[in-house]
Image (tube, one colour):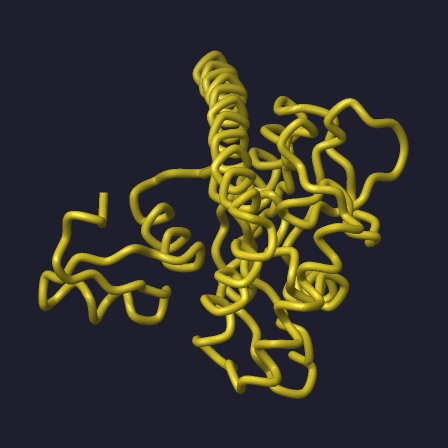
Amino acid sequence: MFAAISFCVRTKAKFTQGRTGPKLHAGTTIAGTMVLARLAGIRVFGTGGLGGVHQGGHNSLDISADLTELGRTRMAVISAGCKGFLDIPRTLEFLETHGAMVSTFADGRKGDVDFPAFWARESGTKSPFVIQDESQAAAIILAQEQLGIESGMLFANPIPEEHAIPRAEMEEVIRVAVREADEKGFTGSRNTPYVLTRIRQLTSERSVTSNKHLVQANVARAAKVAVELSKLLDGSLASSDSG
């Protein structure tokens, strides 16, 4: 949609208010989308991959605003985990500190499962919690609302197996891309675009194809969660009316 627009900015939550005045076109980050969705009465949405703590972020403090927004805005976000080149263990620790619930759909698997790494289904880091299906996710969302807890919820949805790139292959690609970014001084807001570009080149565009499929899968799962949540809300209202 934005390809035909002559001027477009990427808007984070803290800039949303300022961008509404000049009437500029803008694409929102997850943080910005959370704020707008909450204002619109939307309870759940699907997206690609969450931002997170960058490699070395414990020193640089390069941490996505997506994480802080999840800690203060009640919203259910369904994504393929966070971007695979981020520091996943520290990202999960940050979310825990800020009170955001994190879980991963089992997707047919038994026992503990890994928190997904965007292009890869496994990251080597176990998910804090495992969700079996959309109805269980909906029940958690409703309970959060009924308890008046204002922090957000992240439901990680692993990329469909047929579109995933093996973890070992992606780890090597990411290692090269991140090392080059460091050597060339791509930090802050310049880091992610460079790393994503190099990953696309190093995977011969396979990462882009995987990205498209995982977004479609996340949106489809978010829609199913929304349907299950609507059923629970209807039942809750019916019970209130009868009482």
